Length: 573
Image (cartoon, rainbow, N blue to C red; front, side, top):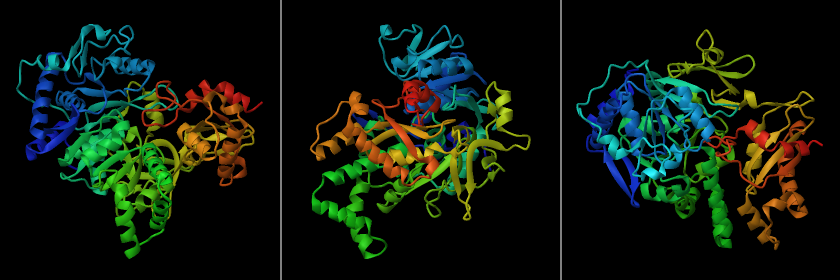
C-alpha cells in the first residue's frame, strides 16, 4: 500500500482536480461550492495562522462543530503542521467535553457555536490557550473573553508560504474519544497509516469515484463519517455536501441528489417509518398498488412496479443514490430488505473507533442480509475460543492515549485487537455479530441474553420509539419502553379513542393493553428465558444531553439504568 500521510494525499488530489467542487455547504439558504483549489488556499492560510498561534508538531487541536468546511480546513491545516486533531461531539455533556479537553491537553479549540464554548470550564481546562469561534459574534455572548472569530483567526497570518512539516505515516494524526457506552470515553490514537490503510481497504471493497457526491450529515467527530464520509471522498476527488442537520436531511437529499450516503440504522428506520406513514394515509388503490409492487420479483412485473412505485420512493432520496452505507449499530434485516426491494442498496458494515474504523462490509455484488459482510482485504479477522471477534491489520490503533493498561488489555502480544464483540463467521465467509461482550445479560438462573436483538425487535414496532432491556442478575427480563407518541396518537384516533397524556401512560388501562399486545407479539419470537415479563412506559426520550445515548444514537445502558433506577426496581417488587 502506498500510504503516505493525509496532507500528502490532499495535496495530490488538489493538484489533480483543481477546479472540481470539493465541498458544498448552505449559505443564506443556498448551497455554495468550494473547489479543491479554494480549499487548498484556505488550508494554506489556516496552517500559517495556527503556526502564528504557536501550534506545532504533536500539539493537540480540538474541534467542536457540526460538519462544515471549517472543520475540514482546521483538520487538514493542523495535520500539515504535524499537530493532532481532537474532535469533540457537540451534543456531549459539559462534564465529558471538559474531560476530553483536559485529558487530551488541547492547546486550542475551534467551535461552531457560542453555546459549545460556554460548556468549557477554564478552571478545569487550563491547557487551553486559544479559542476560535467559526462565526461572527458579539463579545458579551461568550463567557470566555479571549475568543476570536474565524475572520480574526485568518487575519493572524504573516507567512503565507505553504510548507508540509516532516511527518511520518506512523505519526499520530488524531485522538478520537470513544462514545463511552460504559463510562468515560477513552482517547483512541490513530496514525495517518491507520486511517489511509482503511481508506484503501474500503475503496477496494466499495469503490468511490471522482464523479460521486456524498451527502454528509453524521458528525465528523465520529470515526465512521470521518473516514468513510470525509477521507474516502477526499482520496478520490469526490464532492462532499454538508446537510444542515438531521431534521433537514429529506430536503437536503432533494437539493444535493447524492450518489452515496453514510448513515446509522436509526436514520433508515425513520425513512422507512415515513414511507409507511405516507402509504397509510394514501387511498385504497394506492395501497393496493404498493403492496402489489412489493410482491413483484424479476422480470416485467418488477419493471412496472419500479416505474409506478419504487422510483417515486428513490426520488424522495434524491433519485441518484448509488449506494448507502450503514454502520455504528445493527441494521434490522427487514429494513435492509425493504430498501433493497425499492432499489436502494444499503451495505451494512462493522468496525470500531480503534480500527479506524471498518473491519468488514457487504459489497454491491456480494452481500448477505443479517450479516456485516466479509472482512476487508488487507486485514485479518478471527474468532476466539469464547467467540470474541479479534482483528489484526495496519488500521489497528496505536493505543489509548495515556492509558497503557487498557491498551495492553485491548491489543495482545501477537498484535490481535480484542473488539469486545461476540460473533461468528458463517459458512459463506460473512461475519455475524452476536452482541457486545460488556452488555450481555446473565440472569440469576444463569441464562445468557443479548439485549440488542430484543431491543431491535421492540424498536421495529411503530408504536415504540426507544427501548432498553434489563435483567442482569435478575430472575427475568424486563423492558423500559419509550412510546412513539405521534404513532400512538394516530393509532388511538383510528380506534376512536382520545389522545393520552404522557404522564398517565403507566396508569391508563387502554394504553397498557396496547403495549402489552406489542410485547406479546415480540415474545412470540423469543426463547422462554428471553421473553419480557414486565415493562414500564417512559414519558420522555433518552437523550444525548443526559448522556443516555451516544452521538451515533447507541444507548448508554449504565446511565439509563441509573436515571430510571426507581422504575426498574418497581418491576422487580
